[in-house]
Length: 203
Image 1 (cartoon, one colour):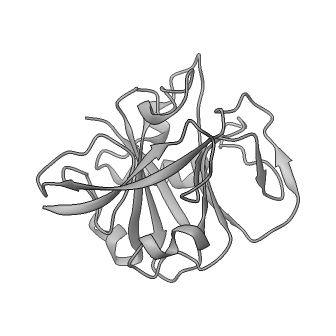
Image 2 (spheres, helix red, strand yellow; image 1 turned 45 degrees about the horizontal axis):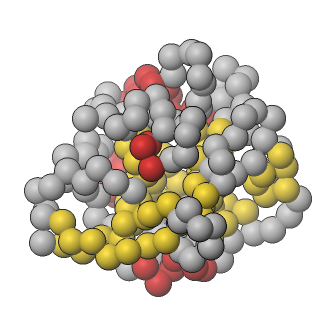
């Protein structure tokens, strides 16, 4: 049995955890676009100082905000651009800019040029799971969840931080990762720089 921090959307709107789903603005120099020239969608923002105590590794910066972006379309197929299922070429494609993790330490807010996921604050709650469970909810954890396909080279440089479950997002974005039961995984470099990687896997 292990204890994780479940990330629960707070419909009351009170920011308690430091993790926010969606949003229309981000502190970035320019709004990021993928290799096809399409603007990315802001999936979540993480206030590092607020969740630092919930992460035992040293990969999370002590300050600043992490923005997690991903390719998204209501009409076009995009799952293969954000999914890693074990093929190294998939990871290369993802790292080329189909998803993006950006750390900001202050600056000018840029507005999203595309429809945005409604901004929702979250709260954290302890939840016990068996080590062999396949968790289908958003969570922070000190270890990657069971059943996840993980490249060995990734664990040398990166630590697992959290997973985001597509159905936890507000309508009409429960298909933010193309499928309503898909899971996105966030990893950060162990050096604490805030450099990260985000990819999706499906059941």
